[in-house]
Image 1 (cartoon, rainbow, N blue to C red):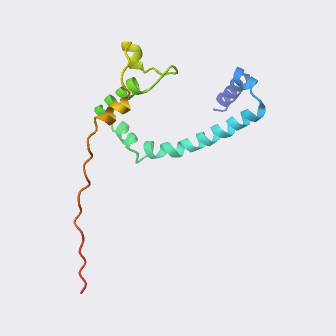
Image 2 (cartoon, rainbow, N blue to C red; image 1 turned 90 degrees about the horizontal axis):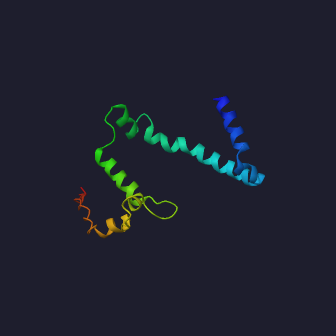
Image 3 (cartoon, one colour; image 1 turned 45 degrees about the vertical axis):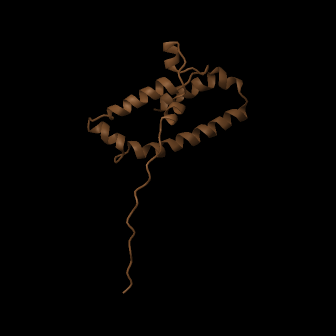
Amino acid sequence: MQRVLERVRAACDAHVLTCSLPVHVLKDWHVWATHHVSAFPRASSAVEGRNGSLAGMHHQQRGLPTRRYKVWTVLHNFDTRAADGTTPAARFFQHAFPDLFETVLANVGALPQPRQRKRLVMFSP
């Protein structure tokens, strides 16, 4: 791991972008990156840890639910955008599609009301 770290540092120091930036900007980037890297294990441990839902699904060879893969495919093809603002589906079919979020929002009807709980009546002796 130490050798890999040294090679990564050497590549970073020799990169065109890091050579052209002022020292104070590089320090700010380092602080930002260190903060985000230190937050990652805490954020992912709830999902991938011993009691996390994804870890259980993968370790038990069940995988993720099939419907979830379909949803992720739709999100990727119709909602992610390239730098020019086009979606993968629009580039593939050479046709513009309506905004996914607006389409889903237009088709959502009135949400059901929460159930009415029975009130607990306290009797005084």
